[in-house]
Image (cartoon, rainbow, N blue to C red; front, side, top):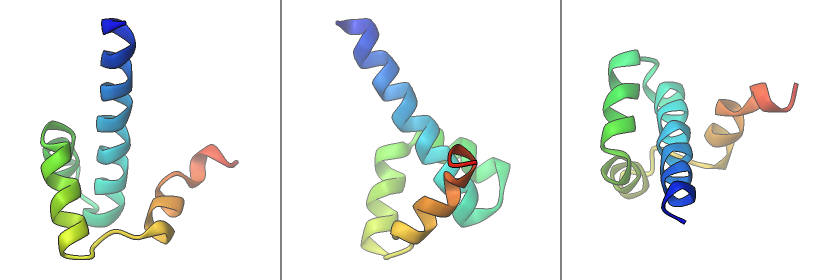
Length: 64
């Protein structure tokens, strides 16, 4: 059970880093978003920096 929750947390952080790279265009901020993912999501939602279109564009490589 612990391994599954760790994998889910890792996938969430990786997804946050991908979206962060789409928003900021910077590897540095992607790493910061990976490390502080809940804080990054709170900031993006409060400041309205993220929407469904950005998330779809960030993960467009999965649809190819």
